[in-house]
Image 1 (cartoon, rainbow, N blue to C red):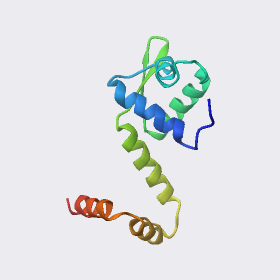
Image 2: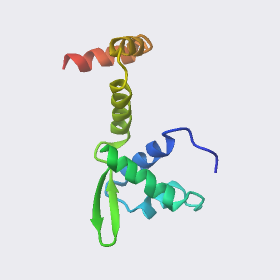
Image 3: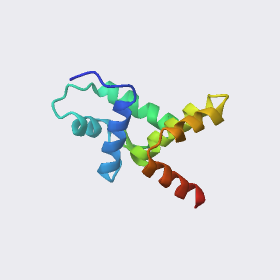
Length: 117
């Protein structure tokens, strides 16, 4: 198994949770992500716990295990990450200006439409 980019496992787990349509145990998440079993169960548990602590994944006890769900899906995870990154920057206007300046025309139009709603 190749090394993942930062945040990639979180995004993959959120995709699995979103596609499942129901809460999953860590074992079910691992089996869907990596049927070969190379991905460590404890890595999946740690990542799910962090997603829950960030508010990106729901969690409830089912017997002896926890089941995790994706209330907002992968898009929610990315939006949460963007919000946290923006929150630590003192010069938010410069960050937003640069972000908008790097959008292609279609995304800029979509953003304008969303802001006018």
